[in-house]
Amino acid sequence: MNVRVDWRASVSLVGTVVKYLAVALLLPLLVALWYGDGLVTFGATILFAVLFGWSLEQFDDDPDLGAREGFLMVGLTWLTVAFVGAVPYLIAGNGTVAQPSYALFESMSGFTTTGATVMGDISFDTHSRALMLWRQQTQWLGGMGIVVLAVAILPELSVGGAQLMDAEAPGPGIEKLTPRIAETARVLWLVYLGFTVVEFLLLYGLHLAGHAPNMTLYNAVAHPLTTMPTGGFSPEARSIEAFSAVVQWVIIPFMVVAGTNFALFWHVVRGESSNLFGDSEFRFYAGAMGALSAIAAVILFVGPTLLGPSNPVEVAGQGESSVRHAAFNIVSIVTTTGYASMDFQAWSGPAKYVLVFAMFVGGSAGSTGGGIKIIRWLVILKSIRRELFTTVHPEAVSPVRLAGKALDERALRGIYAFSLLYFVLFLMGALLLAVDASRVGLELSVVEAVTASAATLGNIGPGLGMVGPMGSYIDFPASSKLLMVGLMWIGRLEIIPVLVLLTSGYWRS
Image (cartoon, rainbow, N blue to C red; front, side, top):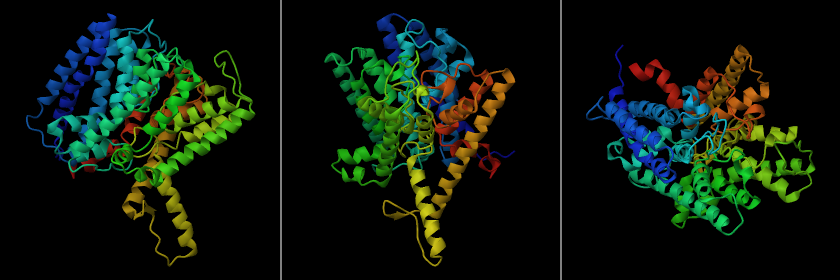
């Protein structure tokens, strides 16, 4: 077969990214030094990352990156960093994540900011603080994008940076904020870093002021690392339920920010705040979350909430509590953060339906959120309205407009194609999970199979039933775990860049 893709160049650049991943591993290494636990784990992982990355770089001395090589490089990078990210779990050898399929699941869930876990016992009694910090750090690295970070700091990627960022960025395209794409990547990461620091200062400030006793310095560092990437990994087994109401209120706006197009905040910094509030996608995004939160709050207030030993939170008839838990969990699901302020498995049926609906909304394009993305729903609704109008007025010319600009028909077809593929993969994933569970005798309800597929493909994290916010994916067989690893990978890269690698035309034409 005459391969028309320079795969050696792609593999070589993947090696460069992996080699520099060792720099990120220095933070958990320092934590291991401070606490005296996990030093060997991260010392060995750093050595492995450097040697493995260097060996991959040898495939091509002077890699030249074209559009096709960019797709391959992005796809392989996310797979490779997930494999390297699993090494600390394997070397540490503690708990369930010491098994290869579990470690890979946890690592892929981290880098893709899914937040689904198979860790089982989430505590410092089983896992070192360094390993737990690495778990959170994988989400922070994956939030804005491993490749976007590489474009920002590695000069060898600056030439093909536009194609790489377009292939990796969540949503239909990325706005070029500066003349050079590497500068745009740095701008996005600086905005991302800035919000992370602000959240840390607020959370730790609440602790010092006596309003958040459990928000220790470690927790104040860990939670911004998983809020801003809309990741949801928490060192607390009960997620954000472990903290006071004021902490939950503080985290809500940061989840909203994380699900917003980061380019809009760059305009705000430059004094162009009208770009944020005048943006049709942002208004639709905020309106959708507000409406869903209001519906859920009314349902929770009216009750009943099915309380049990795993959920001591009372919300029925409690105004502030109903609003807070509804807003927190709806925003968490819409932005695909995956945090929980209470076990929403105990919510009544109608409230759970609102949550399931929220799973298919998604964050904004250019945000760290997953899912279908709110901008696609906005365009679909506008195109449906156009079809209704042209049915009555067949002679009329009525383009679909976004931000005052007419959308190209090719862009519309792409949005419809993506949405169709998303639902096809979601349904196939649910079916395969159900079949695999039946094969091993695992009792998996339809709701659990459906929400597990939606939560992994949409990089959301928690579903319902055994995969609820206080549950885990630990009981699934290894084959199902690997299937969900694939769903998380495909979902994070927005389907098309992965599926295009499976076509013969990509390799030969």
